[in-house]
Image: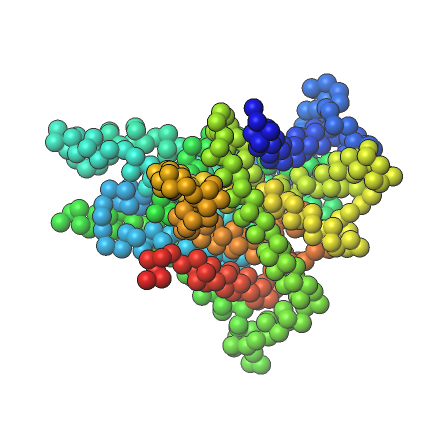
Length: 270
Length: 285
């Protein structure tokens, strides 16, 4: 191995450590409880038995408001996933299967929506939602999050349907399937893993969102909005445990959808 | 006939929802920001909210902080992501593992990222433990206060680099994967050095992806919010946190909307600059 190659590999390892070490440290801080948070100098290895490391997590979950916030987060994300898929899959299918006037424009406009600041959307929606009775509900926040997730759902599902040969669908028409029947029996089963990935994307976008969730809720907060609201008065170990609980699902989700991450940006720039 | 109208029927619901969720709030934000109670108790067009925003004691600080963060963070992220994307092309074994590790931060919320780095940088945090061990500091020391704005700024930059470089990386890697290898191979045959191949072939072909990545990243950097609050609290005001404070603590949606419009203006301005600077050759023709 040449010195150059060694230098290169050292760079790769350093950059991996740059990502992973902070995650390891938040896990340490979150599972150590207040003893570790106030320890000086800090231990870099877990202290105590496994049961002891779970106690701070249990304690965090027992704080009044955490469980409801966790449930609200999940409800909100599910609303976001449901609307995103219902509207996004047909649009993605249209982009993948038909050549129609305005398809490029539609694609560009969809991507451009990401250049809108969340604050512009969330503040007036707070006013509108009060009138509509959607303020402070998971449906309202989920609808707002759909605005952020839907563009991704459309682009992911477009790339997904593009990867399924149109010939399979055409063959089933020959054998007497209707368009809808062919979609249900031939395309859907093949697309299911990809659809699961699109759903996961939408879930993570909603799960992580802070600003809109904070502005659109008062009593029924999502976990992020709840954490942000209690930040000024909560001890550090509570903050770290909260952060850890936010991070864990995200890391798992990204692992599940890692292969799809690139398909969005591949087609988006074509 | 059916397959002519069908695609439009399929994109109609999504288009409708996006139009309602984007255009309506945009109009309404303008109303919120530029209309205030007039002398007769009826709302009239007015600059009252804008004036109140500009006379806010830390409006200029927030504007300056936000611009400073964008100007420092975005170029650093771009260089780092481009380096990482190029490195990925030379990894022989375990490329997908490395790619996965590097894209993990993509799924981490700005709030969580801020708290992760708070754990590292707090008074009795991990960084201070290391600094103590190598003898740079003698005991616990707090960095993230208004007394050390430079360190506070650097801490937010580090957190953003950690969290949001991944999105730039993913866009660039997707773009690189679409460039046929034959181009670089042909150039190699004609004796182009690695640097020349990168500069003359890869970068120009990557331009659309670079444009997307920079626009998206810059817009998101202008609305940086939870990271800053988690690390700096109220010691480091930025535009989005001011909008949040006015809405949440002062319950003044008008001034908050004015702040939102400033963010929007900055985002549009930056997008136009990128579109102009990074024109693709077809558009230039």
